[in-house]
Amino acid sequence: MKEVFVLDLPLRVEKYQSDILNKRFEQLRQLYNYVQGKLLRQYRYFEQMKEYQACKTFKEKKDFFRNHPFHINGILGSNKELLDITFDEYGIKGFVEKLVQKGVGTDMTYADLGFTTYILDHLSAGIWSAWDKMLYDYKARRISFKKYGELDSFSSRRKVVQGKVYFSGMELHLDSMMLSVKMNGKVGKAAKFITLPILHNPKHADYEMWALKGGLDSIKVVKVVRRMVRGRYKYYLQMSIEGEKPLKGRKLGKGNVGIDLGPTTVAVSGENIASIDKLASKCDSIETEKAKLGRKIDRSRRANNPQNFNEDGTIKRGIRLEWNDSKRYKELRVEMAELQRRQAAIRKQQHIDRANELLKEGDTFIVEDNQISGWTRKAKETKVNENTGKIRKKKRFGKSVANHAPAMFMTILENKVKSLGGKVVKVDTQNAASQYDFTNNSFTKHELNERSVTLSNGDTHQRDMLAAFNLQHLKYDEQEKKQYDTEAMTKHYERFCELEQAEILRYKNKEKVDDHSTIGAKEL
Image 1 (cartoon, rainbow, N blue to C red):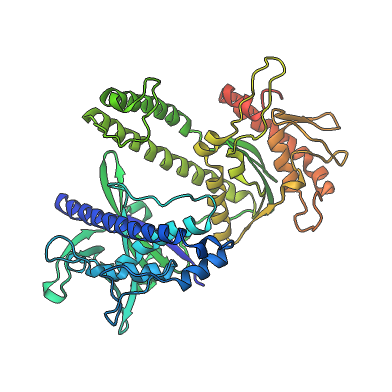
Image 2 (cartoon, rainbow, N blue to C red; image 1 turned 90 degrees about the vertical axis):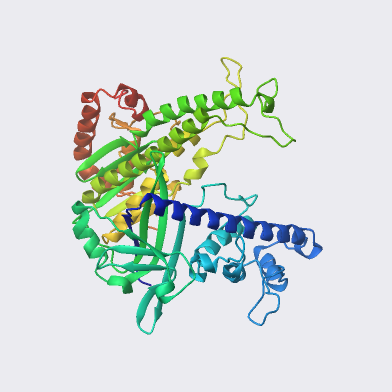
């Protein structure tokens, strides 16, 4: 299977073209909700059947749906009989494709508006993704409908007719860098299009030219995406391209690199590096802004809708509520959306920058295979503080993981390393990297609040950096766990100490006093 990557380019869209595209997004949203409503009604009927209730495994569920096709009035098959619809990917896809002939307004169908079965394929993929989770993922509990403005993309996949490449409902011209989107169901000279110029960044011209060197033959899917930026929609062209991903001149180093990942930090140890950095450090100030803005939004909503709240401040339940949103409330919601967009963009860019810095440190990255979602779960056991008699909080690292996204960082790093021919080795947490003392080949369990560790030789180290050093020298090829290369550790230990002290000095020079308590440098 060939490698596929995505190229994202901005589009220049005039005001009237923006109105047309927004109307198309809204029509697709209404169609999405229509399909979900029909499927949800049928699923509720299946839930009441004893045969379905008797299904205990996923396989039994799939067999039940395969053997119980249903019909929807007006949805006909190729022979004008009612179409058999099943609760699987292909059954829902066939159902959605038939909706190109569904009426819109008076004497109009979706086909007359320029929608094609290829465009509706993209819609059906999103619909099936929701049902796939609902039916076969124990975490999913319900099907959600899309609110106004929540559907932000439509696409068309490649088709080849008589040796020529087409994208049904769209025309892509790479020679003139233009994208044309069809607005009616006509063909030939009667067809109407809106033409959108494709913009590019001169700094990335070489990258884009390399990505598009295969021409239309290499492009599998063309997608139009809109994003809210500073209160206004901006539009982008996303192309899924088949072939070798263009490189940016980066190269991997040589040797093993140990990585100890935490909820907010990442510690790294290699032949020429011993560091610990806060993940997405620039997002902390934005989180404070979001908290203040959230309180403003809540006050505004309560002031304009006092009838929807109880005396104790909770929202009334069990009745249909009508909300009166003021102009100020709507403006604050736009501000919040912009803050969230900025935070996500900054977080991702910081992760990319940090991953790029680490590439030159080695070609094999060793990290513990932690279940990061487990860090966010609350504690089950209720504990009481012996000194105060108060119940201890059950919260763990939910907010920290959400704000700093350690899993995203590892995904970005892993993709970059693999694209350059390196490898990321995920080892079992039972190797106890944070507990190992190579000076006497022993394991000592440490509490979570112990941020510094003293070895048997009397040297004190920052806990996370020492864990990264241990992972760097883990014999990951061994079948037995807790196998460390003590000879190599003894050889590299002096160099590690020098690099660690330099890292601590770097933090002190930057006067990051607050971070010192987090990373354990203060105790050193």
